[in-house]
Image 1: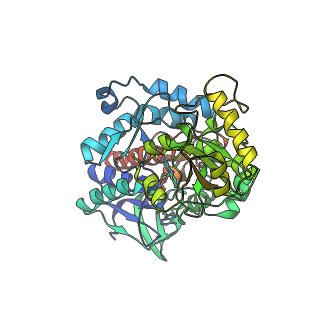
Image 2 (image 1 turned 90 degrees about the vertical axis):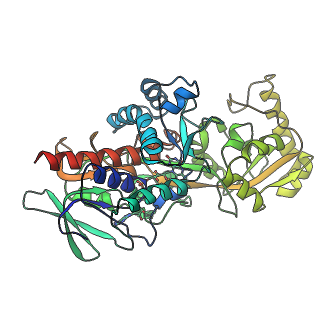
Image 3 (image 1 turned 30 degrees about the vertical axis):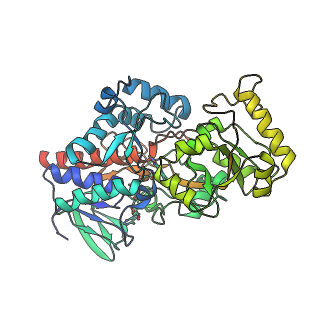
Length: 451
Ligand SMILES: Cc1cc2nc3c(=O)[nH]c(=O)nc-3n(C[C@H](O)[C@H](O)[C@H](O)COP(=O)(O)OP(=O)(O)OC[C@H]3O[C@@H](n4cnc5c(N)ncnc54)[C@H](O)[C@@H]3O)c2cc1C
């Protein structure tokens, strides 16, 4: 690795890879280090979905959208929080970001028109055709390789190096001092660090973490030691329905299109309109497991998603032509399950109000043949982190900038509200990784070129 780096990127997920590519393309001498044996982090495990308000793909599909509409959507669920500046930034830049990925770089992504998912009033998400984050990561890795940007896996950054003024001048990597004019922290959040989760997000601390093991919150400790401010530390993304024991996500399409979740007593316990993230803590509160009930029509729609099809092939779904048969297969009490679905179906046809206030029923009422999947809730990632400005520069409590230090993605304070999981809109995780990574890379090179 060169001793004369312009930018040292710590972490090789979506944020780090986007930062490295943009800084390189702005003329920088860049290197990436990654502590795990393989790059990708949580970005590889995600569905690769990101919003792109006003992208040319939306325009071509005749979808009316704007940054203002996206800000209004995000604010409606996340409210006021410590990173309002980043909400506005993301809303204004995500459309162009999608075009950068697809048109400028050549990423294999498309606008999703089959569903919107939580937090979006119009079809705004763009994703790899496979709906797998691994495809996006593979594309970014290909762009990194094409540019000959060094990527050293199995190398953990241990701490930051500073000069006598407290300016960052590099990092200690696997015991070696690596000097760099700028350093960008792309190490994700702290969901794999049980102690930090217990301290900042206690309501989800007893839920299994389904993300990559590298998210141990290293950036938080380093930033704090330099006086960095933290934001939105109690916010997180949960997932209400991870198929058990397969460990695969049950696509939320099954619930959005009309499915419900019931507990071991065969009864529903809340409003599924809260979305896959917001509903996770409720699933955990009612018991260790829950069961998703939907039908064959909904299954046929979800089958278009590769990951769902894979989960189906793994035998996660049990089928029956009657609710009694379904209850027996899932070992649930028959009468309460029958009663629950009968009441839900009545609400879905509009003849009564839903017991839990659900408003969106899409393809319900449910009808035979019925499907059932045993699920448990999961923690996907934390949303709190270092407060940054629009150029991804890390800020102190007094609003001043820590010189030469940038952060993005899960390492930075996110846009999903101040606490809990209700403020998470689909794509909030990856889009902050990509936009802040790209902006950080560009700003780092701008500052170097101005010197
Ligand atoms: C199952 C799942 C599904 C998801 N689906 C979506 C989705 O569809 N859309 C969305 O927006 N978000 C989604 N998310 C969240 C999203 O994946 C993350 O918010 C996003 O990937 C964060 O990107 P990142 O680059 O900040 O972190 P990561 O992709 O996790 O990359 C961080 C990298 O830094 C490395 N690292 C950490 N510490 C060090 C160190 N000290 N030295 C060197 N390297 C280090 C890690 O090993 C890791 O490889 C999902 C998450 C999960 C778990």
